[in-house]
Each structure stands twice: as structure tokens, then as C-alpha cells.
Image 1 (cartoon, rainbow over the protein chains, first blue to last red):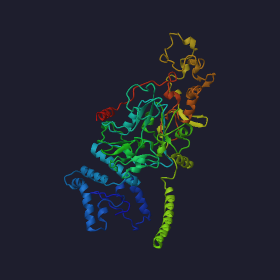
Image 2 (tube, rainbow over the protein chains, first blue to last red; image 1 turned 45 degrees about the vertical axis):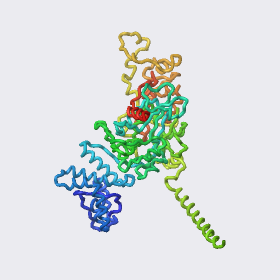
Image 3 (cartoon, rainbow over the protein chains, first blue to last red; image 1 turned 135 degrees about the horizontal axis):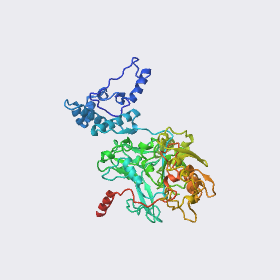
Length: 363
Length: 221
């Protein structure tokens, strides 16, 4: 089995011919090797290393192990195999079966190389195309160097208009039936402090209401996130730029993270999320707003599909009062840094040591 | 008695060894990347020392927006150009005669009928607080100094000094596009109507009917 494979994949009838080199060197010391590697990365990430059945069969192993592995794989992939080996099935359903197989056995996104990330994104785009006939634009953009995202929320400015919630739902393709929302805006009585028990996060009257103030909560992207700690399968982690993300394909839906979050920042899909086709935001990121499935966790990602392109998260852009400030904490000249250094900022439940990267302040 | 002492001595040795091992392992694990910093503020402070700028830029997002560069205090950033957005600039195209001559003149085109001043009270403000009847193409400070329409924020800053400080730093107002440099911020009049700067009350953009249902169900149980 080739060393850099973290999962099995079935390459039914689409086996790429392995490139051979005249120098017969396996270490990649000859110039031809490195050149081909580069080309592979940009064009077909599939044929990068030993793939498919080769992986399973080109291995020295006992009969017992071989049978064990084959049975396990075949059981899960029975559907895929039957349709892809069938003479009657058309090319498209074969391709679909191939994609389903590869997706079923792919590894954890956190451990993938850039080529593997691109391959899974390409598969997901193609799979969506095969199923709906529509093309989406999905990326696997990595965290940039010298970037650490942070957020500041001005309690004096928020008027409770909830334009942020609308923008968030549309941007992140949240389930319309269950009305899942990442952001909660809490209406709090003046003079009662931050009393979340008495606050109302589902008001419907003209705002701002007399004698009340408003504050928003969402995922705070803690630098020491308890949700990450408790995940039994490492399906959630903190990226280099500080975003706490979820691999929806690796999540097993145990909801430990939901219980561990002291800020009610995580949401669970009790049913398969549905978004009308014409309302789907087609600019997606693997770790962000791509379509989720039933039984997985999701949450605010500071709109990873936007923020890694230099844009502000949808809530920041939609806020009509300028209560939301977003930026790079490592840039000494950024506005977020000015807020942290010049305003009186605080975070929720600071004593827990979760180190949220979401600060509140007042005028 | 003697035979019991010996194993205890050996245990002591082992305990020391274990202690050394424990201290070693703790000191090693402290250098682990996860626990490297005491707090996120320490992390920010330390990591931003070697900040050389980022590859991402807001340039492509700002494309197509007319911007001008301003420097106020220690802050230099861009704000949207204003004069080009005013429908019938320059003002002197209509305001060719002094105001009192135009007023009540039925031959002139009617204009500004929709402007109602709701900004401070009449003791503090009237049209002439910001406009100069003798130089309609420019604004004027309280002391009568000329201010370009593009830099109207200078007029606001005369009274709203704390908001001005927050705006310069970036705590008040919004960015034109993304977070990435170069910084381009909205100016006062991009969000506030200078004649009626107050934000009106309105209904929230949405109501979560599912949440209401779920809470009712919970109460029923």
C-alpha cells in the first residue's frame, strides 16, 4: 500500500496509467518526477499515487486479512459496485457510484494534503452536478499566513434589526424548515445586566424597544475551544487562522461538542437540511456553507468562504448600524486591533479560559 | 522488620526517577504548540511582532468604487468620493443668485422640498451651520472656514468628537468592502442623512416561527 494513502478508494474502470520514468528512481530525485508531480496537482489529483484496487491488491498480506478487508469494503460499497460493474448502467451512474465510493472512504479533511482536498472538492462539485444538473463553485482554500481572525460587537450600536440573521441564513445555506440560525440576538432589559435567562432572542415588535438593549451571540471561535477537545473523532478543529471548523463528512453526530460549548454556539441537523434550489448560495467552501446532511453538526465559520477571500462575513456586511467589526488580529494597523486596544472590551465567561476571539464593547 | 525496609528504599529511588520523568514530560508538553501562550492576547502580541502583511487584499472588492485617501491624525485610509454622487453638483448651476433672491421666485425650479431638518434643535443648528449661502459649492465650518463636500466628516466632527475618534480608529461605522487592507471606510453621510441623522425604529427582519412552536411544545410537556 502506498504510504501517503489514508483511505481505500475503488477506481472502477478509470485506472490511470502510472507515469514511468527512465531513471527508475523511486525517491523522486530525477527532474522528470518533480515535473510530473506538479502537473498532477493542477490537473488530475486522482492519479497522484497508487489508487483503487492496486492499493488493496498490491500488498503482501495473509488470506485472512485480505478477505477481511475485501468483505468490509464490499459490504459498504455493494451498491456502488453493482451499478458500476453493470453492463446496463450508463456512464453517469458509473461515475456517480465511483464518486460515492471515493467519498465514503475518504480521510479526515484535517489530514488531507492540498491535492486530496482539491480532489474531494472536485468530487463534491461533480456529484452535485450529476444529481441536480447545476454547477456550484466550491473551494478548499487554506488559512493564510499572518492571519488570525477576530470579531468585535458594539452593544451600544446594535438595535436588534436582525438583518445579520437574514444574511447569515442566506449566505450559509441553512435549513429553511427547521429555521436554523447561527446568530442569536438577545433583547435584554436595561439595568438587569447580561441576564440570558430573562433575555428574549425571538422578539417581534418594533425595535429598538424602549428600555432594552441588544447583544448578539454566535460561535466565538475560541482559541482554546472545549468543543474541539471533546470530539471523539476529531471532526472539528481550530485552523491556523483561528477559525473553528467542522468536517461535515467526518462528523458522527454525537453532539458532545454541542454540550461542551458554554456559549450555545453549535447547531445540529435533526433533519436533512433543505434550501430551495434558486436560493442556494453557490459560492461554497468545504469547511463552510456547502450543503450539509442529516445528523451532523454545523455552526458559524466567520463565513470561511468569504473571509479567506478578504471579504467580511455576511453578518458584518449586512449590519446597518456598524455594530459588527471583523478583521485580522495580527495586523497592528487593523481596525479590530484599534478596538481591542482603545475601547473597553470584554468577553463572555472569560473565567472559563476558553479564550473566545469575539469581544464586546460599548461606545 | 529489616526485610520490609529494603523494598521501601527501592521504592524511594523509583519515585525519584518517576518524578524526574514527570517533570521532564511536563516541561516538554508545555512547549507544545497548543499551550504555548497563556492567553490569546499574548498570542496576538507575540505573533504580530513579525507581521509582514498578508497576501489577500481588498483591491478587487473595491474596484469600481470612487475613493479618496484621507489622513486624520495617525490614521490614513480611504473614504468614498461624494461630489460625483450628488445629483446636481455643482450647486452654483442653480444657485447663481443669492438665496433671498431665489426664495419666492416662482420662475426658478423647485428644489430641496423634501429636506426637513431634524438635527439637534434650532437653537444649535440651522442650514447655515453647515452651508454657506455665498459659496454653495462648498460646506462651511461653524467659524466659516471652507470645507469640501468630499470631506463633510469634518463638519460632523465639530460636535461629535468622540464618534469621530471611534470612526478614525474603526470602532464606529462600516468598511466599504472586506477586512483586508487597504482600509476603505464609509464616511458619516454614507449611513446618516445629515439632515435627519437619527436611525428610525423598524420591525426585525425576521421571526423564527419554529422556535415559538418548539418552546410551546416544551411548556406543554
